[in-house]
Image 1 (cartoon, rainbow, N blue to C red):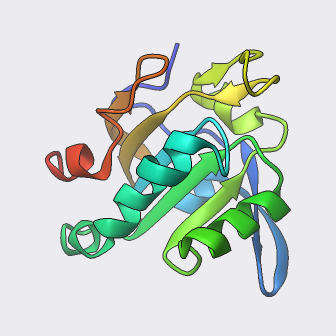
Image 2 (image 1 turned 90 degrees about the horizontal axis):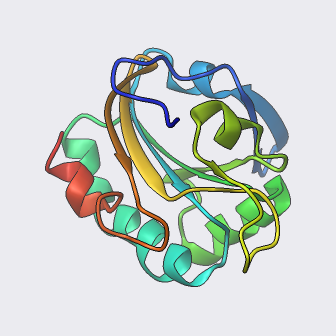
Length: 160
């Protein structure tokens, strides 16, 4: 069952790679004391994720910030090197935190893991977006399999 409104973000560990190196951090510590938007995607460099989902948050970055969002994270079951490369290729670096979840531990802790997707071949995160304040979920938008509607930046903005 996916994480719900009023739940606390889990202590599950993700990885973030930047110019200074590889960093390990818990989701709860990433969100602590801030208003955050977290999106999860099935895979870096995949069609909908690269053409629509991540770009919607880049296109609306300033509007999200104007609504009080302190940080935006993009979670995917990929390694930190792939997530950094995707962030660089999409110009998300420096704006959106590219959160690597190589063993799907965060996806599992959030209750959004999709086991053995036919196209991607292993456990992945289901597509979603959530808003959290100081680590507590205030809004949760889980997509139906194959859909891209409620997890868009446009939809999230309506709820900030």
